[in-house]
Length: 128
Image 1 (spheres, one colour):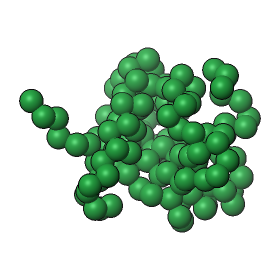
Image 2: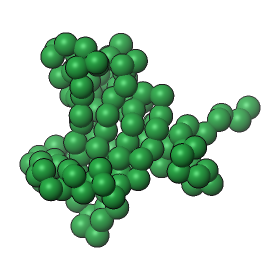
Image 3: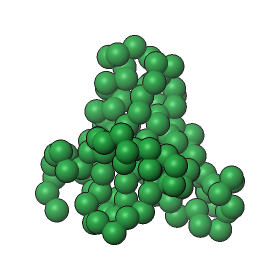
Image 4: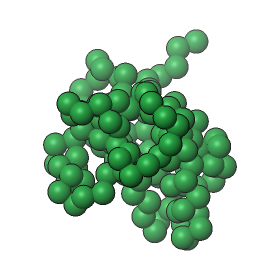
């Protein structure tokens, strides 16, 4: 799998986006809300929804760029998934490099929190 973020990796059609929101699993973390829909096609697709409460246009674009970079570098973790990511305001304070790494880290943690009921899913407490 290449290291690009091309057209085939973007959720673009209104119908497909609505399907992810309607049928996808919602997972919460401190910096992001994830909507994940499993599918048969192995091509991972991503949509980043950054609202105005995140900040001005420059901040929103910087956050979206950081999330897309994390997705691009770790596409193998998103195989067979359509993912919609909604960043929370604390994410705006991070640099794009940090943002991409934290995005992938939090995705791993919430997607592997299998024992919790859906309304309690989130970051697992660190043991130690």
